[in-house]
Length: 193
Picture 1 (cartoon, rainbow, N blue to C red):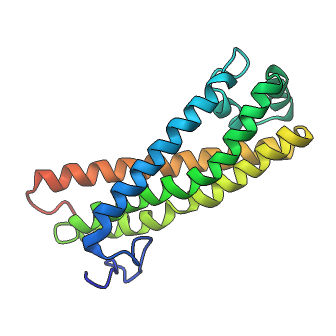
Picture 2 (spheres, rainbow, N blue to C red):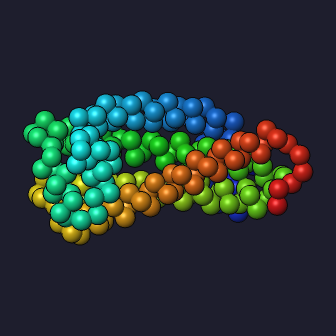
């Protein structure tokens, strides 16, 4: 696989990155994503209250204009400023975490291609699908920003919630695939197809 192409012949997300450098790229994107995630966690802390127990995540999953309005009303000016900062910083985060997850999935798939071509093909496809998190997170952020700045609407609340649900589902599947691939690669043994 020196061309960087997967079993399906697609270049994938990691295609431009030489296979020998993918581990390093994964390490760098993971460290950067975790660093930004820690800053987002600190920024999110003042957003947690009885109305929004999960802070920004509660806002992401408000689903209705009424619920979103109640969350925004529960935040004072400093909290709304923290929410705006969090949304702005999330535009950096949305470039990092999908890259890290996609690379982890791609590396896992490549390690198992000889033992399980179907598992590897699934991983190559998933490594590309995880990149959809960028668009989903951007759509979610735009809807949240609109509600924070102009007031909630039913459409914006629903769009943010659906985009967040799809994003978190892709993240979970990608993360679980990467963990399962790591475990299967460590276990060795016969093909898993």
